[in-house]
Length: 381
Image (cartoon, rainbow, N blue to C red; front, side, top):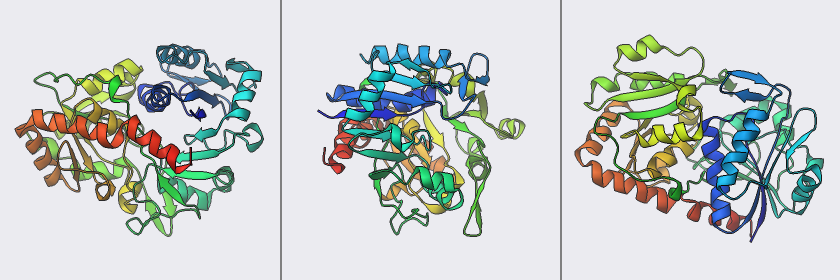
């Protein structure tokens, strides 16, 4: 049994996607018999988002209540703490939190760069799992604070299947990166048939932050890639829908091209609403951020893994993950709108089998039973 502290985002941004991402890891460690503690700290002032009021403040009460309730369902109601911007501890006492950070076999930083100063974490091993393969490494070259924050880890993991290989042009920031998919716990999802008229959907952020320039090139986000697939609803009979948040969303253009459009924050207001949205879908169609496509870093989404675990086939723009992840049954890696249309038609032509294959892929490749032991094995634990 390993003693693990997992640092992620649940309290500061308690929306369904973030909650689901962290819950998979926590549920997996718990189910596999490991001692797991969830940790989070403010990092900066006014960092707590309240989805009921759509405001940012230092008030962590909504996020703490949500996290406490969800962790109680996993039997972890006493195994979490949050350090707010004033240094006040919520959940576990400071003494218990300090002991957890000191005694743990492993501290896992899920991308909270700079939030955990080295002197606060004295676990035997300190690792990070990069969620933005290529983008993070470009920031390391241009932002000294990011480079410093990433300097003190014992091991570096990434969700990018190709990062650090000849298959990707992304920089590595001078680090060796080991693949670790974001896992999914299939036991949290019931593989029930979707409604007959269910659309293919996705949950996405149109443009969360500015483009980044590296090596004389500018790399963007999903807004740059979606145009390639804008005409997809005209090519398939199945309805297509996007639950989208972010800046400069071209809603009228999306609707004009046949997309159904939902408000992203409404769909992800809670973990329950997020999972209900996935389970109410026929499958997923999604694009990737331009930086992942341009560098072929191999990014694969925890959200897509949740669709697969629900028995919902996935059609995903190929960021290079097709070099590593089995595809063509339940999961399709596509490069253009014609391939996307063909994949959706193939799924609809034999939906029951593709649904079963999707869940099988989630179990065999992305399940906590596969990902977490492999992750710990890479660390000798």
